[in-house]
Image (cartoon, rainbow, N blue to C red; front, side, top):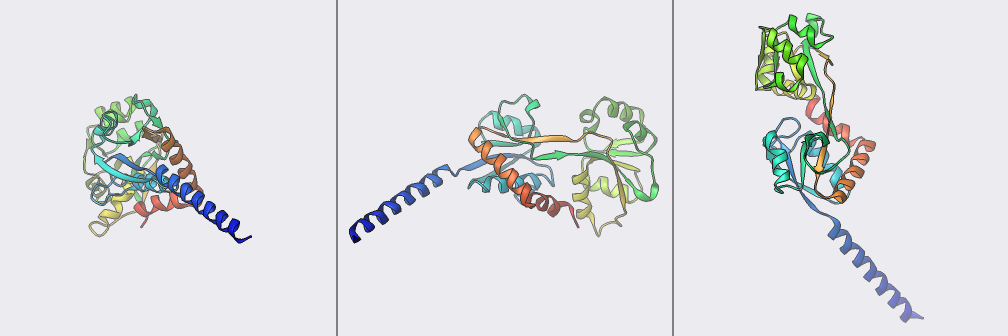
Length: 247
């Protein structure tokens, strides 16, 4: 009676070993091309909102991500050239052939003003009445209406450094800052102690843009989508974002 039990135990151990081995084979190291844009992608700390979201979602299925930080303009080319297995941040409308994930993040451009000024900004056209600072090439990326406003507004300028944009607003040297809301919030944390931070208003006069992760392998894409749902349901997703923008 004892011998068959030993055989059954040995067989069970063999099956367990095979299953573990299979799981180990399925787990993958993903090379992710990531555009440099704090707080979404921060090269210096190998982190960022998007980086942390992708890592957390992939980890749910046993995968790991190694990040290749590049200027935003190179993300798509590196992916097409096969230098990476996945890439942030792209959309199916980019024209790049890929296995696109569910949307993992949305960028929301806004006009930010000081609350104490009570400025009326309910449309892009309203910005023509104020001193406006925007990110580099905003007049190219934010549509024809914004481009027309920028061209006609002698008090419009573009400043590449986001921290400088925030300081200009807080010190009253500009009346509105145009850019992504999370980027503004992130740099407000960065400049705390350098200038007096005042309460602001966010005017959502632009439509949000939903972004996706581009993958080479549809199986990894599916694993990412499943992991993304898990971290959203558990609250981990919101905690990742809050870590970068909340005081």
